[in-house]
Image (tube, rainbow, N blue to C red; front, side, top):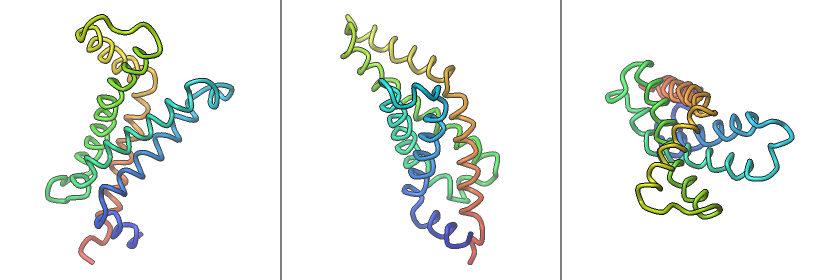
Length: 152
């Protein structure tokens, strides 16, 4: 565990991006009905969920492993959950743009904003809550691994 903890402390953005991106992509992939996993837009949405979680993880990774800024496991858990919420905020406008391009486009910037908000809300209700729980666990796990033998 010590070499992994050392790597996480030395490269927190990369470690968090890999952890959040790969695990949330795997959870998203297996959340689909087996017949739908590799059909239609499902693979693109799975990859998009993994990529935005990786980006969000790269943003929050340094704070997650910094013991002066994140002092307890509960704070790490909440920061992991916040990482998932940040990913939803990143994904919603991109998904709204994709919907607008492939279907009837928005008639005004306000309608695009409303579409992005509704997409963010309903994506959270559909599977985002599960990704939030997974991300909270990832945050706690990275915090724990980074703290193992931190003085060594």
